[in-house]
Amino acid sequence: MLPAAGLGLKSQHYDEAQAATAPGLWFEVHPENYMSAGGPRLSALAAIRERHPLSLHGVGLSLAADADPDPEHLKALRSLVDRFEPFVVSEHLAWSTHRGFHQPDLLPFPRTRAALDRIAGNIGRMQDALGRRVLVENPSLYLPLTGHDLDETDFLFALVDRTGCGLLVDVNNVFVSAHNLGYSAEAYLDALPAAGIGEIHLAGHGPDEGGSGLLIDTHGAPVAEAVWGLYRRLIARIGPRPTLIERDDDIPAFAVLMAERERAQAVLQAREPAHV
Image 1 (cartoon, rainbow, N blue to C red):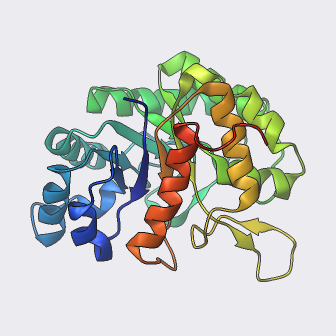
Image 2: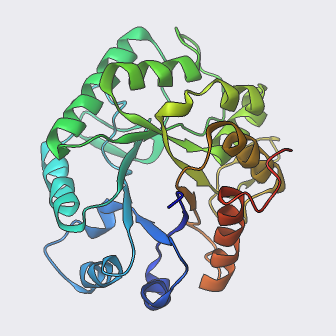
């Protein structure tokens, strides 16, 4: 069976998600929302898992921080992995913790060789703790940083090569970053190692309300046509990969998200033209 398209699972859609019958449909959750000993949310996820595959997409391990991942967080994540047997576990290539302080954001870092060593070590610790390969997601960027030793695609390739991890390619992140920093989104995607890509995310963005001209990765709008075009280009090159429709703000009805999911499914099944 070809890889299929899935949806980010939202609590207001639990009943509809459990009842959905679309072939290949899967759901992705942030594990941090389910790290509890019990309760209705965990019970709902267990019921959905009986009908559909799951993917766990972490937001809290801070892999790019200057410290090891929190062992208690890894322990809780391993418990969820053992219980729900997700087909993919992923994390962001970013940092959010520093010396005991937690920032409510996914923050960038200079892509130095020292950072490569540190992050590769943290990915290794995550994979060892979970007993499995994980995927790391490319970030959304808004302002240029100085001090890089490596291009982002070279940095990602090096992480895959050193650790055996895979890539979660967020096409919207590529589009947003390319617009904000002035490079080619097409060239970026063309440079990624096809064999390392284990999952794709599609999401919406919007303009900075402050009038800066920046695009913001909001996850609060439909997938833009330009992002669909990049997605078709990527699938034409690498072949089908599990693809998620991500929506975290201004959540529409389940049927609206399913319509976007079906559009991604059509690309995966070559029912939409591959070429842009």
